[in-house]
Image 1 (cartoon, rainbow over the protein chains, first blue to last red):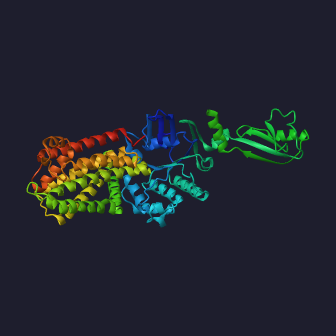
Image 2 (image 1 turned 60 degrees about the horizontal axis):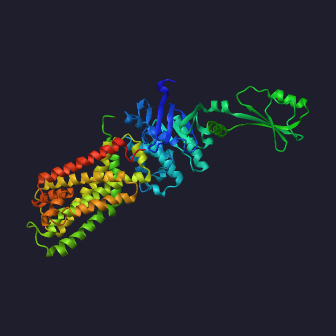
Image 3 (image 1 turned 180 degrees about the vertical axis):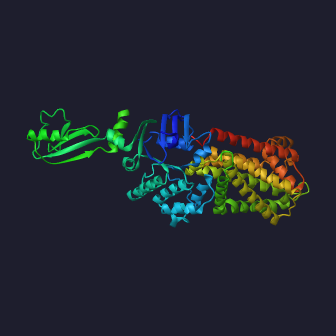
Length: 310
Length: 257
């Protein structure tokens, strides 16, 4: 990968808190320019600590992080200027107006006032009508969008979304996904943490899994699904069976639904001879009236990965 | 950008803090003015009329610099400590910590805004006092210098308290238990020359004595300690506060995990 195609580089990063708790252990991670990267992990895995360290909120114990080629410690101004952060918690100044708080964020990040950009951002996030409202008067969904507006106020190249859809309804979640895709289309790199597997499955180009402070996997989503995804073919039998018939030991077969279904499990990546299996079943006089296939979800993959490392 | 001040950030924080003052006008400006006016009514009018002149100055006029200092100190600390504590309390501090802002810029903006509010307040109290007692200012430039130095120094102290505090009780404890007693015992309402000799010597360990003495000198040309010493102690106190703030930012004490 060329240096130019990497926008964030994390190298040998460790974080040990004053209590002695090791939150991050030897993290090495490259984020590609323009991608949507989903960081998955159970609660307490180190997702927020990693994001907070990259953004400058948490001091690293060891290691190096560069953002757009700038070291986050030595050249923190340049590094932070390109970052927008949407934290998990809805932390806002309750008595400030929408317009003022977004304008404040832009100034804080060193950009001169640009009412046209603030207006566009508020309109994109359906907050324009609320621009003169105090934040305390906004709904939870609006506050969530406001946090994004603040993070986008200074036109960042990288946007961190820490659990962006935690506790939001389905409609808003889909709006968020659409927004993230629209941002990616403009060249913004998006890094999101989530424990909603469907969110990562729906949006991410690449997925990283973190557990107990260690990155245990980074992979293209499609490749991950292909490598680790299990497929199952379920045959609905005409006659229920008591046991898997003899002579089929080399197929991974099991019975379900009180013997009314015969389930064949196989790896999506390996070459399987489904036709051979169906022919053998037919030759053995086993008739079926319907069949369907399913593929394991990212959630299944995630659970097996995390549990496998425990 | 690394070598230049982030002027936009300083302006943004300063405006934000000043906007809070106007939003909370009653708490920020009007209440201290009312309480100070009450001091004038009680000590300047009711009781003061029965107290003889001090250094040829009527008691009501004598206490004006002390009262302004009392408000300046408490309000500088209160403004600055609340200004930085509240983002910690609400969690909005994340934005400040992740922004391309240097520690100097953070201090300039927060302390600058807190000091501005206190100075405005001090000037309002001065104007209010002039309605109650005849005032003269012998050294106006020195008066402004002491006003600004004191406001900045105690805003720095307030900033330190705001970072140190992790609950509202701690936010109040230093002003209540340390600053207010030091101010009352620092000659706000009397000249330390009126104390027994032993307590005069004890009072010299109180830094507020030097602030009030210097400030009062700028009004009436009379002081408990020489103006040079007053100024030196004030600058020394400000330098010590700056050193503590520098240490806080260098280590991330109570700010970064």
